[in-house]
Length: 469
Ligand SMILES: *Cc1c(COP(=O)(O)O)cnc(C)c1O
Image 1 (tube, rainbow, N blue to C red):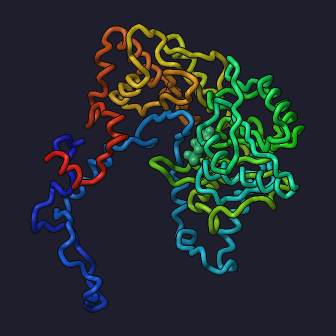
Image 2: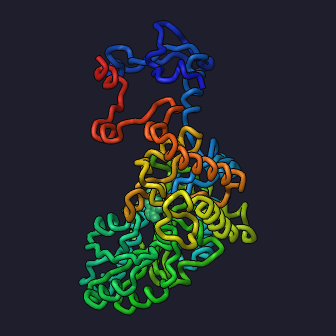
């Protein structure tokens, strides 16, 4: 990376009169824009030669960190490798150039692909139907809860105003329930990290006729398998509620078990996590919702057309390229990788729940708390060593949560490299804590003030100038 150029905005590199474009010869003759459409003064555009532009953006792109540049163990987000063939398939002009308003008889291939993907997801989940309209996981949750709401209403059962959510749930679960107009009832977790079934029984006994659904993630947000699902499903169904499965991270389940078989009625999947479509920075996503037979008529209309089609194509390409033979290895390998990293580090990082995990696990900071080095410091120091930080301070069950998800694609060598660096940071925390506490040192920008950045974001060029003046 050319560090001398870093920090310059393209506007700062601008020199009056510099030109860097070559346009094709105009074959259509001159055309005057109507005066009322023309701006009064020239647009404030940077003036640069082509080489300056190429270097500027190439240097910027080098500051990006992605799955294609390095290990990205961001727990709960499943940042797995996205095979390039997915992109090639999604870029095929036969699909890319379709307009959603095109007559259906001209888009039969594209519609068939949706059916094929639906069929594959039904096979993988044990549910009967999927809608692809939701644009993300949280949108899927809302869609699923609206489906459940429609179902209860169709039976004249309008007193069910509550949704049960375990305290370990992803924050979107209670949020979606609230957006859907439900009251959230929290159930506790046991010391082993799984749902406290006795606490749940108490809730069901007291409030059964008001329970619309229970939302669960399995493996839960701690990466632990909820082994009492059949019992829980029986309890919820017994009081007339439905079981909702948050399948954002279906990774460890592929090939291991199916939500439909466990007693879930409605679920969403994050195609952009489990099914290898690139995500980050807010998109693009796809959160298809699956239902068991009989509930499909209650699926609501939450967006026009057929959802985020390119994401669906990538997911389908991924499923086909693994095939029936290999897709079942995803879950076991993701689980193996996570347990390997966990076991290799648990003597120096605090493992609050020491059991077999699924695709991810959570440390509660460094084991040696006397150094004052926090999870934030460890995460920042990892950047110096060229790794993306794990998820930090989530889930909220521990003070110093450090949530690691390696995914199934990573080789033993990559995992060993990460383990070595994590151990090195643990040593530094004891021998040279200041270096860790002031990290990162080797990134273009050092430690930022998170609070100030959140409370007072400076997002525009002009504002940035004004601030500095
Ligand atoms: C990522 C995630 C979600 C939310 O998905 P979005 O696509 O970000 O809306 C919900 N639940 C769990 C468990 C997740 O990991």
